[in-house]
Length: 318
Image 1 (cartoon, rainbow, N blue to C red):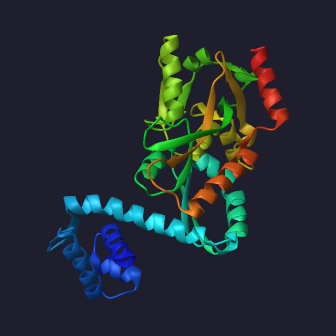
Image 2 (cartoon, rainbow, N blue to C red):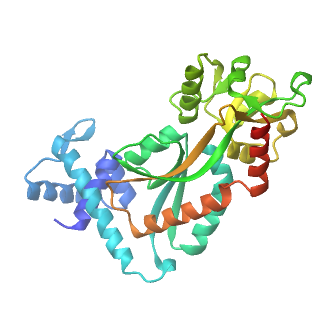
Image 3 (cartoon, rainbow, N blue to C red):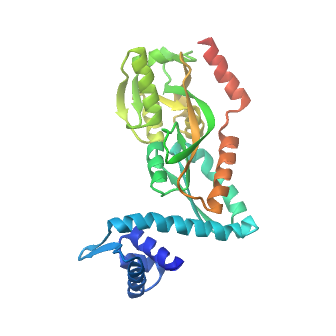
């Protein structure tokens, strides 16, 4: 058994086909089949069920896949640890960002990564927090930022930034001069929320239940820009974290039509967390990427003192 055989096996398992894996590895299918078969002979276990429609992992193959991935990751980490200069680090790292944060963080993150790791590759996946958490646990991404993640033994969670929640609604004569919105006043609005499950929606639902009323959810939309457009057209109101506003309303065609009110009584906030897998050894590149992601997020997302003071003042007057 050698590292190449492990890599060949992992690639075949990931592609679900010898032919597709051979094309991705730029090698011949017969050669790839022989290498995997030699591995099976050494292990004395069949790793794949082979049939007319393709291949699927056996139970032994599923177990060995986790082992093989772990060994390859540790080998890559050990190899990279011998490199003294960050500019020489190679490999690929995958980072997850919610769309609202992606609009704020992607440019500074890519700029910093390209400067420090010119030989490495960065992939940024944008999806809702729940989906990003699932991909992290499934080893499809190395680190992610999410809103208010659920505690899990499979992940490590680091709280980075706490930001206020606001209600956005279309400006009208009826709400002119409105500065803050009491949570109980949400009962007076038709609301637009992301589809369940969603951390922010779960928190708002829980508080509404505690206060003894039910939210009027008019539309369920999994898209920040679409929610913003619907609110701008007067089709509902939405509860969103502050940084969604800073990201989504900058230069937006709806910016002048929207009223932004801190949500108070109680003051509601959301926490942006950095999440990594707890049972997977990170590569050197992934470790350094996590440090970079933490730094860029805090520098970019922390509310300026004047904005935080204004928000707290509005909340205090409520």
